[in-house]
Length: 128
Image 1 (cartoon, rainbow, N blue to C red):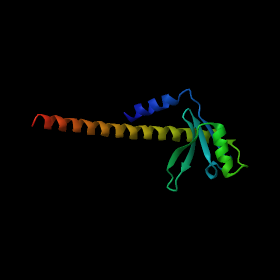
Image 2: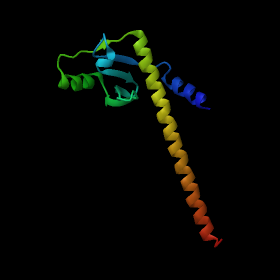
Image 3: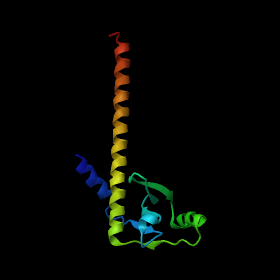
Image 4: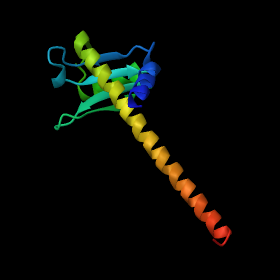
């Protein structure tokens, strides 16, 4: 079943090309990495434990450039290797799938809670 959801998530991105840029072409892990999707610009953040997250940072390229220039006006975006771009896009899609699974789980929990409350109310209404 997870595979089906993964296919759906990949399908949502099909036809929409990611744009992936970094600030350190020779060693992308040392710089900052950004990915553009239909939802805006995200920054790839890697924790000390190695986990990867994508944080929304801007809605337009101009907004992103303004944000980056505040930190270091000399930084410019560079294209990363094909292999690295593929890795980042796969990570983003996997993260999106994980987020969707988490949201689905929360929705199911809320629905179950609402059903339980509704059953409790019916129980008390009928004096059972």
